Image (cartoon, rainbow, N blue to C red; front, side, top):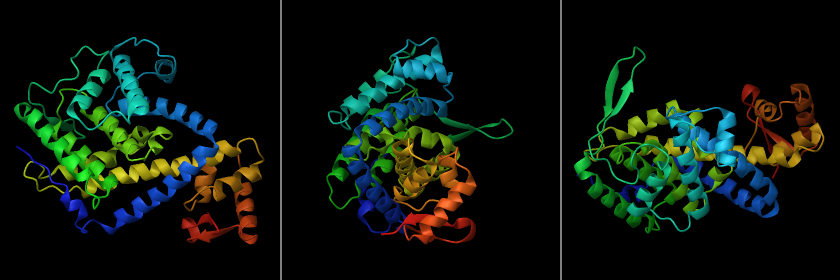
Length: 348
């Protein structure tokens, strides 16, 4: 049976790039907290949008889809599901709502995990809230249509005991002050996915548990910018990292680094997108010049002309360039990089 030991997270042998990413997340987290205190209405609007994107994105990863109109009706109006796909979508809606509203009371306990799974599948014609009764396999299909065994998860007979070991190992590690809690979360998620404890819904459960653990650690950008949708838009690299980190898993010889990097990079994208979107929402009623200025000065991280244009589609590249040039000349912002890699950041 597979056992778990996360003490390697305090070894100091992790890639240096992880520190840069976690530091950037920490800076944006502080800014988000300050903004939430002063702009409750903006964050309420962003949360409403993100809920729809989360329900849509997490299910779309698994090929569970319906129209945007129906997604909105199911999420915002509690519309009853009309078919199997919508039943899966409605279940995720309810489970996501529980994580959003009750994360402080939930914990990484098997009973909470089972209840969340039961809720997620409450509209589906399968029994949720129980571990798999038969062995399962993770299959991939190559471009020619040939199926291959990608990974053999934990046998059904060992799931309950292995999940108990996973729970205990996580609890031990989260109480260790020398372990970075953000880096611990993707390690747990990877192990959960490799165990694959349920006959259905493991991927969606992994994303719900990711949000739960992030929220419990004060990292709630996924509440306002869909963490699930960020995975969906880059799912090929996400699955590549998952595959790389699962090699040698049964023997305890796998490297968590590829999946950790993928996970924390996804979270950083959420924080960066929140930073950008806040600037737009806050400034949408003012002039184009003021919106461009707000987009740059409200961004903690350097931003390019192309990124500004994507955020402000009604503003011409010529106007953006003129405003940026004036801001640089006035000493409000400075250039970072050169040529095509030029970005702009507010002067300290």
